[in-house]
Image (cartoon, rainbow, N blue to C red):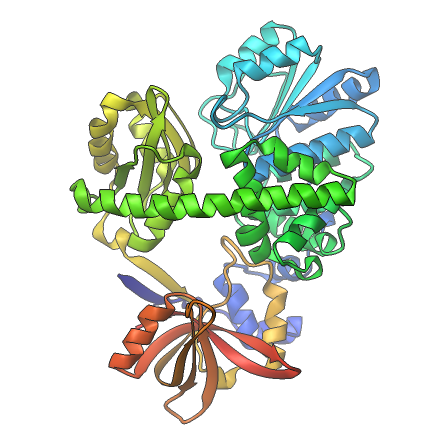
Length: 554
């Protein structure tokens, strides 16, 4: 079920439009994103990296920067310990490249998803000691590695933690940087691991800071964090530089995926390139993704990019099989009436549990936890909805879990096999979900016919980019439009084209990429419908036409 909600936030949109030389519609869209006041609007529209607050406002940053600067000057062996997802890989790349540019002796280690699990492990510490490493710098992990870091310090290693995840207790380390730790006064708490790594490089006056910005942007988009505040600036400026990149690995991956790097945006990173890099850590080793970024020879980069894309193609097939298995489990295990779906999928590759959970959550609107076998225990991932904080809910079930971590909308966990049924009951009892929390909310910016839309307005709305979490693509609604000239197109008939006629008689082209077959059946029953959409300019053979991209219908 869906609940369409039109945002009704008030302001003098004509005055805002006059002051900032924008259409009142654009002014309303900015207000809908809770950007209030002249200073905030100016920052939203024109902010630069110079407007990102001083990194030294972040608790622990001064200590981390001082230690790292001294270690580089002393020629100490420094090892960056990252994470196996896209954010962790980008953070690792940023720190390695930045420290090397400052003359540091630096290497890296990324946990293996199966061998190590999440975060810095005892195996990584033992290897660092064998290699004569002096200093460990974590990125995108470490804030919950209390025992491992305590042992590392006991063995004489200097330890710097940089992370962005929720903090239950601060680990014993020589410096800890995480804006979510108690006592941190940094005004923006939603940076990802790559963003924090970039801030550390800013704090140590890294000479290639601007060169590293695209990788912070890539990690920020890939980690699906809020695209507001500092993150908005990082991503917007970083994308501009990324479109001009000379990195052979990224260029080769874009080519392998059929993407023009000069036109790259959040979609291409979030849904094409990012999943390819993530697939390395899921099915192979994240070192493969890092090696692609570090490759300087174009021919070798092409070979590695093809390998990375092949891993993601394999991951896609495994995901589809897993989703089908999850749906069978949902219908057969008697948990379809639960508020939180806890599904055990024997034989499912643990690395894709989170993707499957996200797909089930998206389709059915319920928080979903997918568990599978990992040695003698069950391991898995959960994806939540706005009405339930996944991290908080899991913390209430902590006595049944071996380990858990994450944030409000996504988390990872492990538990003993015999605790599965008890955990399923407990997580449902502790979710405190109401029936309305399980109804998908479609947030509409305003009701607006396509007849109002002009090319100029569409081009102006680009000032709202980059779109993503907390800054969604503008969404409009039309009521009682008539669908005509309806036809399924595309190689597999997964796209629906049509003409929509408004009650006043004005018509526009429209297209639907989502639920096309379902929409086609709906129109065959009744050609009059209401839709939500966003407007685009369709260019074909030199002809430009306005087009509504339909996202929801009823």
